[in-house]
View 1 (tube, rainbow, N blue to C red):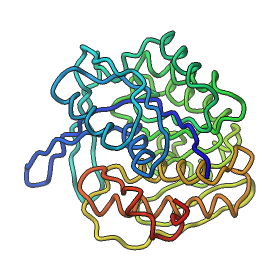
View 2: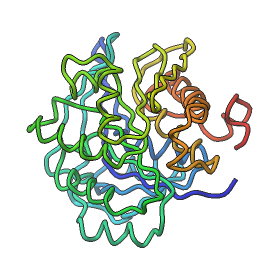
View 3: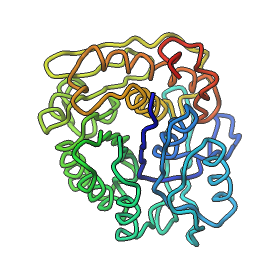
View 4: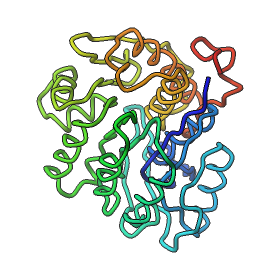
Length: 315
């Protein structure tokens, strides 16, 4: 298998995990950060476009990226503080409260970013999503990056909607819909669909996203089967039971695993229209997500851990 260049655009942050009993633990995270680490930990070549603070949390972020084999595009420290998310852990799934304004992650200079993107050369795949679609200037920059990549680049969009962080809900929904016109794979949870298309059932919302231009729409629903809308076909991939620790980063590791598997098999944008290929990729990605749920925080599996597992022996 050849080496493939993947870019991830978005935030890094620190999750303050608050357990029901009041215990608090700080772990580095953020949707794009988790996706980049999942790709790097599986041996992929991934370049992360984000700003990392010069504060103590920023040093943890930097160390974690380095340990995971992620290439940080802008290596210099940013003077703004690290973004913080307070995550309330409970049986119904995590609740998020964000501290976003004037933080390092979102402080990329658009001109410098687009220049660095051009210097990377043609990408095999690009990820945008989560709070990087909410906070300026990164929100507008994410759209500009999608517009700037080559026509052959696989574009993966994960809105990973956080309504509590959105100030202009109509503008946010419009941005997601615009990005769908170029996106090849859109991953949404049932909660995302309920927010983007109130009153729609999950597959109805997925069809609406596909109608905007998305090649393949993947819908997650906690422990229920992962479904994908590929053309007129609906694929369902079951999720085997896990020894659950928490679900933080589960969707992100699924996306990272999917991108690593897809590019590692030399699949292209056109292949997202093949139901058999999408199903095989999702089965492998679900395995990565399941293992992440068996660990505290978003700790996706390493390449060596996957070598003997179904769908990953090619590594």
